[in-house]
Image 1 (tube, one colour):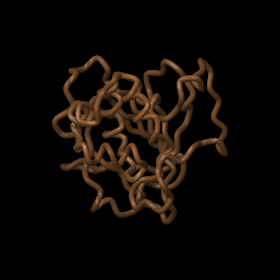
Image 2 (cartoon, one colour):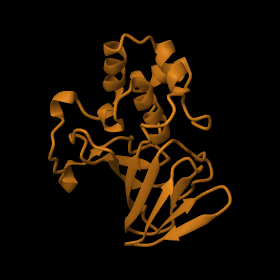
Image 3 (spheres, rainbow, N blue to C red):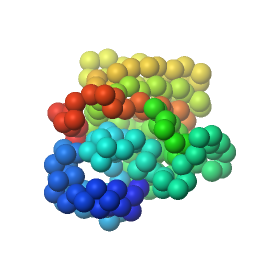
Length: 190
């Protein structure tokens, strides 16, 4: 994603300041993302994609790689967050699919979600627990999920996920960005 954000920004003749303002992040944070010193959350990635006027998955794959039919084998999922990162670990799925309305990820949430802030963004999310147990947390309630359980919700509700099983849970996450919404960034994006 590092060079992809910079490349898309430059293709659109945007300065760092303009993209940061449109995405609702600071210029210094955006600079760190472009230099690979910081990994943005899905909410921040969605804000960057909206500000660049591209589908979310475009941040993770080159335009030449995009296809109409994409098969992603289990061993081909691309890590999108460093292994040593304490928070959620994301793996990209179907990054080469073109014109998609949803972006799939394999999510391995942390056990301790306390230090992780609640995130919200325009669009919808769908979680399906593949392995282990997980908990979807909202400020006023939580939902425990086991293998085979799923949940669908508006992503504008502040939320975060944590693992409840001994090993990190394996959760299929589908993010559908609301591209028909307002052009301004969501007020609660971090």
